[in-house]
Length: 556
Image 1 (cartoon, rainbow, N blue to C red):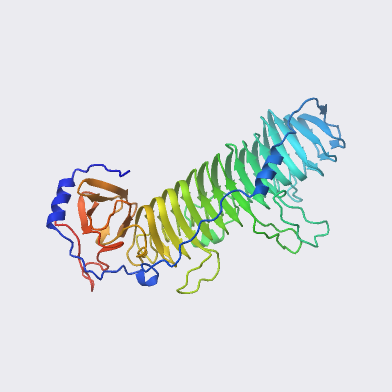
Image 2: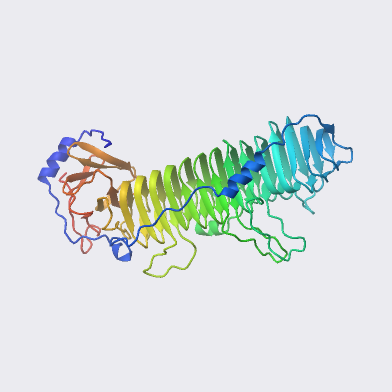
């Protein structure tokens, strides 16, 4: 349905349309078109599969099954050694290590305060830790730092209580970690939650990749972490569901001023799925299946390095995310999909980056020191040739980008087919609001992309939806309401955040042969008639420069 808000200057618009017809050179071209803008898109990208792999669902279901009915329990042995299956209760203050040497053990912590110089809880078998009341756990030997909790196999945290862990290395390390309804508060010199696929004993071969190991599952969990390393590190996947909350700060958080140099020196990711060093030779486990999936909940990430980082794919289908990152806010090496949720990236170096970036729903707001949304795979670009492995697809949602680099950048194609996209590119320099080596196809949706004029790239002439590309003779001030209107009033509007001279607008209401006006506040910037898929209006030169050509401005 067309959205209109009648504007007080509608009558003036009609007069201008009648009296101030466009005086625009027919051969006008934006100056960046020779660098890849305009032209045609040879082949539209196809969307990838963002559904969860079966192995992820199976592992999560298995981790959440049973094992939490406390029933009868016995006191923890005085020496801390558990050698038979059963439920063991630990409460009050206790010094020394708890050592689990049997399968089928549930350790119940009830208002317990545990401390040891090195490891505090160690298990050679899968273990369930059930929390009652408020519990604390700490190790103290910084010289020979060990993980505070170290488990071989699946470690489950359950119960309605809480546990605060202070560690000189990783707070929690296990083959797999599932936090189910429990509350964890983590302080660590290393990682907060660290799940890894175990290598063979002699470290002669890399372990096989599997979704059944090396994962972290948060299901109804409450996790707070302030750590020097990564908040959550997983060798296979991180899956966040059940309305979980995670508040993670790494290595002091994101700098207030983020630069390329500071981003390169960032250390401490918020949530990471990817390889870790598994041998003395620093060799890495590599696979294509790494995944971060955020299904629901509330994530607050303040990280010195990337906030969300996957060496495979990454999916945000729901939840509320608030991110400040010293490097990339959302980064993956494969497919990054956003299909729901509310994501606000307050500051970062780059906002959302992947080889392929696909947005079909939710809301996304990005403020970045470099590119806002970037499709790149790290390979060397061949001049004049797009990267077929990279694309940006926007098919839904509401996206707002304020970038000092390119607003939306793709080493391949950008396809916009739905949703609402508002982009504030840089006010000056060699970046632009929209930039694609393979062309920009606008086949639907609502677009307002503004920025500097020097490197503007016009959408492709074989787009399915009409586009206005307007070049202003003078700067349009920050805070200006840009309004697209027809004879009935406002169709579509956007408030600029920075100065701009280039304005690209597209929406379903732009129809061939019809006349429209573009306003900056109550000032008429231009009126125009749509004469093709791309209607270009304005000038590419500053007043007084050679080639300066006013066109389409109303009389004021």
